[in-house]
Image 1: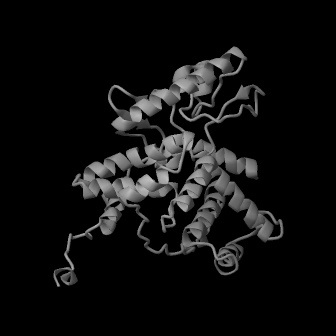
Image 2: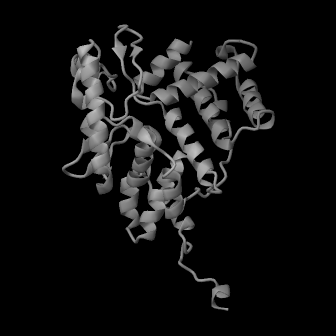
Image 3: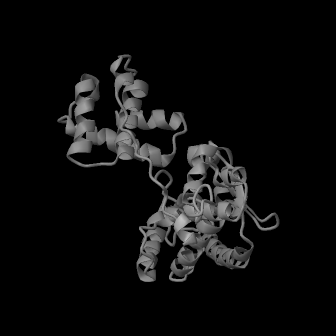
Length: 315
């Protein structure tokens, strides 16, 4: 059954991360129901599973909704269930949360305590508004030094967009890529040099996965065998490397905020709005489909959404 789930997800071009999440939830559901086949289960079992997540496990509304989405996909798409209870399942209400935003000084304090690749990735997250995985999945061809642009391919929602390449990062990024190229040339000389390609491009362009343009901007320090061919491939740097380094930098900086890598993206948007840039421009740079998503940052500006001055400030 899991093979059918994976096939259905790939046929509909779901992201690999979504595929792994859905498969994990379906497996947890099956174990919760005593390893019975989902085909003999229904609304009572699904409701009991979702309730146990909220009551016993204490998961967030977002996590509970992800589990529900996985089960809806299983029953509605894979098993082809045509029963009314599928549409009647209630999604948990996700509470509105304001994003954590760092001040410019706090960003400096944290980044100053990072070094190496993690420091460069953090500067890109803050300087270009990238999500962590978007930065780590950049290819050499996606960085346009002449136009000062970064092209994000297959971002959230499988959407492409163009964002800025900060001027001050160009020398650092050029120097970093020179080191990456030396590593790539060494890999090729050793019979390696392959990287995974998106979709079915490997079938269409057999040698593209060994070309310089398709190499990762932030490659993994280790080679790993490809699952099918057994060839040594190099994946991009794993996100936990940067996440752990960033968390350590936050603690070392003494910044009293629960900041994580995505906080740099929040700070990028807020600081652009503070600088007077149009919200539609910020929406485009962030890749938000709806401007209402971008508008959350107007609630965390230094002077408030309406720029109101408190009466106590005039006492």
